[in-house]
Every structure is written in C-alpha cells, then in structure tokens.
Image (cartoon, rainbow, N blue to C red; front, side):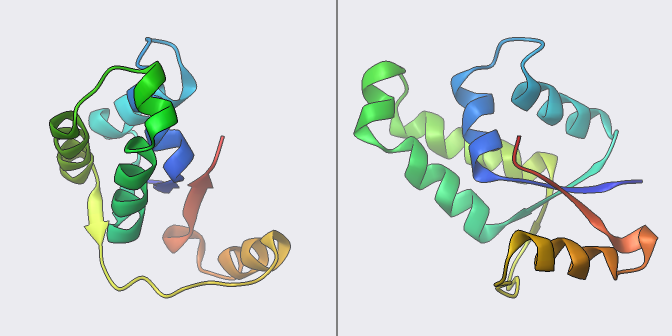
Length: 113
C-alpha cells in the first residue's frame, strides 16, 4: 500500500474547500477509504491548526476554534500520527534523491498539490 504524507496546505485546503471533486478533499476521502496509508506528524497537525487560526482565513471562512480542534482530531484518526520526525534540510532535489534511495516498499509519497 502506498505511504503518503500530505502537506499542510493540502490539509488546510481540504477544510476550507470541502467540495466533492476538489483535489484536497478527495485525497482525504481516498485515505479514509484505505487507498493509501496516510502519515501525519505532530508538527503538521500543529502547523495546520496555526494556519487555520489566521485572522485573514477566519474573516473569509466561518469556523470556530472548536472546528479546528475537531478537524485536527479527525485527521489524527484518518492517518497514523508519527512523533519525533527528524528534520530534513536541503534542496527539493536532494530530498527527492534521499527518498528514492529508500527501498520501494518504504518510500513515502509527498503531496503538496
């Protein structure tokens, strides 16, 4: 089964634009269906919550703090939450090469849409 990590922007977009057929919400739907194994770090959950607290987003979209907490909780139920993820620095090319050096069965799929 493919292993996938979704970027914060994808997770934020899925909450703000939950229309069926939208790429971000469809990715979460596929994860719920078991089409791939979703991995979410504590840091991604924290960053998602912080981005959603931005006044400019709250002004445009109507949601409360409780909605943010519930959404992040739901994300944690959909995916496997991993802690203590090592920081990876370097160019996107170097990071891709590092991922490709892993055995095929353990390579994550990264999505930033």
